Image (tube, rainbow over the protein chains, first blue to last red):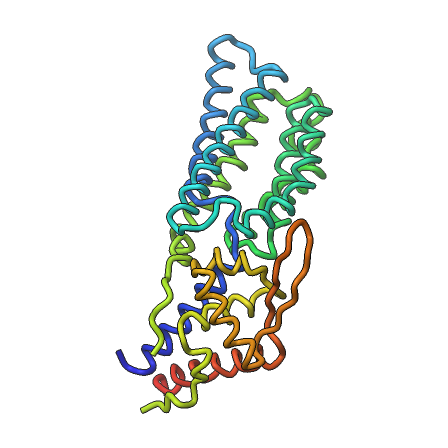
Length: 218
Length: 98
């Protein structure tokens, strides 16, 4: 190996170690893939129910379906984070995870409270989209670029819907949007955005950037 | 041919380079977190930290919260030494390109 090659490798190692110490990915790419597919599945279920029994999911059913999807996604995320920590031989409750949980907790608490206070599916969907974006951005000081972009996308979309939801989903002469329409909104955001995020992580190689080992010094 | 004598030999050792790198990215690190991140034994880590402390690169303070712990941080001198080390490596890469 030539000197410049050696120097470049050392710099890569230092950069990798710095990123490992400063970057924590709260949502892994495989989790995002599962979340995206489950969200599309939620919409498929709402579509099936609407056509099978000729009326859409009730408010309670809508809430249950999406809470189950949230629970499955959260469980999947925990499994992938645990697997990652085992592969890197790091503690599961690493300093990065503790930091992420501390930053996520306030927004998630508000989201949980609002979920039990608000009943209309369209309101719930917009609140979830907006607060999820806020939660992701709460980790921006140590999150990788792709996760920050995901947070901005959710927050921007949620804010647009907050401002325009009456015009978009309840035009004059139309009543409350059905839970099928709202499920479509959830699938487009939680489904589409997460699938795009997973694709971006793999395309940009962000899933490999924490694996460079320390080399022997000369 | 590049002059390797320009690289700070104290930092260049792989264990100490890893310690300096971690200390450079956060204000301070508890001993246990450093140990977990670097997967070093207590004795190995203490030896490296002592060498860096004797060179004036690393400072530490002991505190008692729920239990006693020691926190380590880079001194101004240590931060400058680390930045100089990086500059030398970057020069090596640049010189190859030009």
